[in-house]
Length: 276
Ligand SMILES: [Zn+2]
Image 1 (cartoon, rainbow, N blue to C red):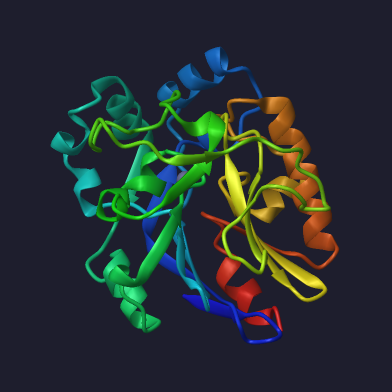
Image 2: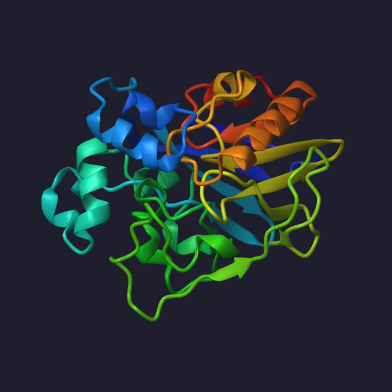
């Protein structure tokens, strides 16, 4: 786990590892249309090493903001996926999860002195299961995502929530190194949800303003910064040209001082510790 604070000490960003995920090689990186990539993922036999599933908690004077809600130890059991058999089949065949005891969200929040009942609002970068397993606990609080992420799109696992659930949505805006636009989550405008396009139709990230620096919580726009540096597109990206452009922008941000924090990047913890 790791924490960074803004220079003025008013905002803290905590990276909370809530288990591990492994995916097929073609899922992690495969630049081909979906009708080629998806069969390649099903047929693939190579697996990535375990990658962390990182939930970010933003402590702001106006309240606690959670960015994604992690995985669930019940992922290992077939009944978890029963409410959407087609999407569930993809997860069961093509992803591996490990959520050991002590890696749950409550334990991770407690380790940094926080509790789930303090969460004021939740941002869902996209509705893949490893980002939404804990969402049912926060449906009585504002939930925000990108407009294209809702209603359900391919690969999202939404059947476990009440039929009347509908998140607030933020319209898509251009993604550039300016990191402008989007929706402010705080009255000081220092925490904003912005489009980070390519992975899903409405994929979003969160920008935290830190004086002359910025922190970008990048969701699954890339698995890690090495992948974005070589322009590697994930096999499940719904818009490959947008995903490629996003990779270039992430690399430009990383090389000019923005702290870019994806959701499955093993290097986020060490890079956060080196941030100041
Ligand atoms: Zn993910």
